Image (tube, rainbow, N blue to C red):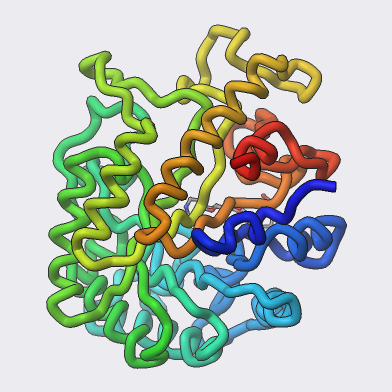
Length: 359
Ligand code: G3I
């Protein structure tokens, strides 16, 4: 039988998996307990899950997941306290549906963070306090997808949080989390960190948090593709390279921050979503050639070789899911099935699994 992933990595960093409201108690349990020593809730600790209605907190599922983690000696990463997505609309408006004042918004946010972080105090070791607050497309508040021609300049995402709270909401979020559990490590979490301009914007935000000792780490999501993406505008730089990510990790570590790889998966597709080239759309498992599986495994191996080289900078590497039968990527793009994890739909280890344990 195959090695245990987390035991293989015992000298390097913790190995985590995102679980949802069923995977922590269904057929995935043997994989979870054998291969992972850290978990995170994919959705169950987000605002809409924990406080769907003002003042009504529901910890039922999150508590069960944390109890599962404790029973199996797993660390728990908390994800996430403040985000523009999966936040109920009541948070931003008053009874007549008009936007609330900054004071009220910050107050609601503090209340939420204080309640949640206090509830899990001593049981959640690291919190993603603020998620995805920096974007390159300020105008509509959305990220620019892969079309970098839409990017204006990297800065605060024009979310409801920012529109009402200004940049202060970020500082206030970290202050509230720090106060509620001084022993939990506090993280800023984001994607596309390999873009220099975005990283620079993140770093200037982090400098402000650091001056008050409010931040301990940075989470790099790492939703990767089987091939590095090509920059559409210049047609030259490839972004998702091992080298770019390694530079990222070093840049954040140089600020004195711990790095967690927080949402790792490697899509079997290139980034050209919606491409009319059908050969790039591998719809069924049977259509995955050995060559593709090898390529996928090699890509994983190259990233893990790099993670091990930098293991003194990295505390945790978490996969965004357990096995290919349950991955957000298969729902995200019109239901196109994807195969981004180390275990297949039958929960068996894939070539990618062996490529990261064979060293
Ligand atoms: O809860 C409802 C359910 O009641 C309903 O029947 C069902 C039908 O569509 O939808 C359910 O909500 C879905 C939710 O996941 C829970 O399953 C939402 O539609 C769906 O949009 C939501 O997707 C999540 C996504 O965040 C939302 O942005 C994914 O599961 C989750 O993997 C994903 O995770 C994010 C990280 O938090 C941040 N970084 C990016 C990452 C991937 O997008």
